[in-house]
Image (spheres, one colour):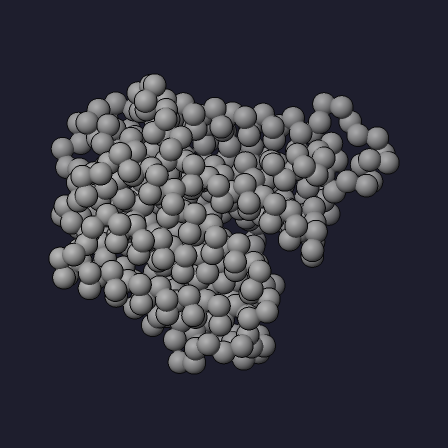
Length: 421
């Protein structure tokens, strides 16, 4: 809460008393940024971390990314239920405090085991920001007002994957790799103090709901019985596997496969711009064309790009520029796919949206992290294992979309009654 209580008039006019609109948008964007910066900022530091912690196999440094993702994905199952019971503010404070404390643990980690434990806990803490950011916005706004807040926050959020590796690289120019975790710790402290000082409780007391295992079981039953939800959830998992496989291997690819480590942060930022641009394009065209047509064409493009990429690698003509261009094209298609896959998976289970969103986040993040880790562990100094993995995951995504749509692609969006069984 604000230390200065708002006047009754302002309290009545504001959906989040004590916090103005611009501040609210920046706060939500900050919450949304914690996850991406915790992953991408340390990618340039992985070799230094591996050397410092005596990790004798280069591929094993990828565990530092995967451990975070596993904690982040698994914790999404519980935060929604806890926030409905105990309120948004208390649960967010807990998550941010854990994120901050785990960052301190990573700063002082002297072994791979301690680092992985800290990263898992950091991911568990960060998961609160993913769930609570959207939930708090939904508490305060609806309809076009909610869309405006999320769009403005998303513009800030999209800049994080572009800038985060460069931030990590810049820190390492002037300080050891542990300073990156100090930066994450300071980010957690800022957001924690901001929450305690300025954020009111956005869940009305009468809307608090008890933790009901019967209700959770009912929601799970609805999810597993929905062909559309299961199909698009698993398709999204395949796509996330490709993204995490790239993130896991990116630093090694530029350093070892292309001997161009100095270009890593610049090209990584360029690839991230493609994904950001596709997200903005999707917001403009999805209402006109429909989620199915946009995402299905994007999936076709994604599969086509991965096949071309694999063919180039097998022909022996891969270089840093073909890799970067095709990776950018793949991420452009990814941005058009995943948000729509998520929306379509949620359509038949909107009446249990909280639990459904948690399950989707858990399956797609944990499953994607495991697929991505498997791809990364096959890195052999070339891009061949990664590109072949992209093809396999793209084909898997296509199979699950065909399952969800009963074999019919590129249709206009259809009524729920036609998709929920």
